[in-house]
Amino acid sequence: MSQTFFSFGIPPALIFIIGALFIPLLKGKLKSAYMLMLPVLAFLVLVIVPEGSNWIVRIVQYDLVLGKVDRLSRVFGYIFTIISFLAVLYAIKVEDNVQHVAGFMYAGAGLGVTFAGDLFTLYIFWELMAVASTFLILARKTQKAQSAAFRYIMVHIFGGLCLLAGIVIYIQETGSTEIVRLTLCSAGTWLIFIGVAVNAAIPPLHPWLQDAYPEATVTGAVFLSAFTTKSAVYVMARIYPGTELLIWLGALMTAIPIFYAVLENDIRRVLAYSLINQVGFMMCGVGIGSALAINGTVSHAFCHILYKALLFMSAGAVLQMTGKIRCTDLGGLYKTMPLTCLFCIVGAASISAFPMFSGFVSKSMIVSAAAHEKLAIVWLMLQFASAGVFHHAGIKVPFFTFFGHDSGIRAKEPPWNMLLAMGIAAFLCIFIGLYPAPLYKILPYPVHYEPFTAFHIVAQLQLLMFGALAFCLLILSGNYPAEMRAVNLDTDWFYRKGAKWIYVAADKALNGVNNACDRLFVKGVVGAAIRFFKDAPLKLTILLSRPFSPLEEGELKQRRFDEMISSMFTTGTIPIGVSAAAAIGVFVMLFFLL
Image (tube, rainbow, N blue to C red; front, side):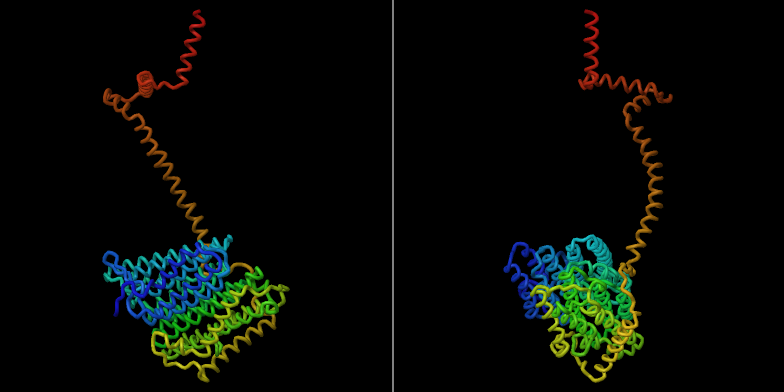
């Protein structure tokens, strides 16, 4: 393995992070061109940098590797820089430096995680990713956004602490900081797994995602949809491939969000649940661990970043132009926002894995890998999840947003930059779906897979048509589950509702104990000690002079008064009130005497 110290310019992660610091100093077209240039520069560096460990910094006895490049990390690096360019283009007209700087820091941290060659570097960028992404939620400047951001950062602090504790234990056990394949065999490896699982939104650690992402800014949600969960997918594929637990967690992860998404009224919350569903396919592929499954996981992550960003872009465009994002408030927008509607349909077809769209050429690899490993139950769960995601993300999102009942809203198309970003993403979704060879060429393992077989196409179309039929029958019969206007609590009930009860119980019980201790110890024992030592020299003098007789309170007060008067006259510190009274007394005596 080659080792290159600071070759090939600046690491891609630092291009974003250092570049972000200069954004507030620029204005106008120069600022726009500068921000668009940074992802392009990072992409070019990734193209020319050789495989191996690059950009190594030695600190004490450890090497911090900022650029471990191989086929797995390079493909994630490619898609992270591509989506960064599209997200920046989408946000180019936003006049908020906080969002721009946070977005670049966040993207840079995601690249840092991808190319980290040691556990310390991984942890540093992992935490930077959590902090930077929080500002994309706070930037919306609403009470809901602030509350969601607080919950978001608290969950990620917990995950980061688990990761750090696992890293420390692992290094203590092995003496190595190198990122290698691990098994769940010790406390350290389990804690690392939990720390990564939090960012991957693996149930029951998942509710932070649908809680926080819908409260982010219009452009911030596009960044959020790309990096945190997919960085976790990369780390799982790097460290825990073939871990059987991930097969079942991933399968459950594909199914559970479907039921919540059907009831959701907020379009971006529906998309957040579908994001968890899609990451479940990737976790299942990592757990299977075969070459076909890992290729399917990586290709699906690549495609998912594009079509999920496209769906969040279209939903964000609707939110920006109408100020509304609920299913019950929208409808009929295809009349005045036809391009946004078209782009949303492309994203919906891609996430549903329609033949000729990107999701079809990636998701089918994971499903096929489950079949090849004879995982019948898992295969059935993935098929059910495929129909479910078509139901809520493939049909529900475009139907209720752009069709359905006519809401009477006549909003215009969003600005040209938002349309262009959506157009490029839609083009890539269709291009990969029609011609997946370039994507297959950069996957970690050689690809011997043909997605466009008659069996695959017919089977997938049957599945999708069944989902469409079920949706139509429910709508026409009036039995489609009504969208709930309330906030649907998931396993976040524990800290959004249950935590309040725990706090009240702790407040009553622990504060009662605290108050009792305060009365007994602070006011009792400590108070007595303070009173005793307040006149310690005087009391010691009395004790020494009369060691075998008890102290008398009157004698103590008299001696204290005598010492005070003596001190006043000898040091000249008689209070002004005493001096004034004495002077007045002298004048009165003189008056009567005269």
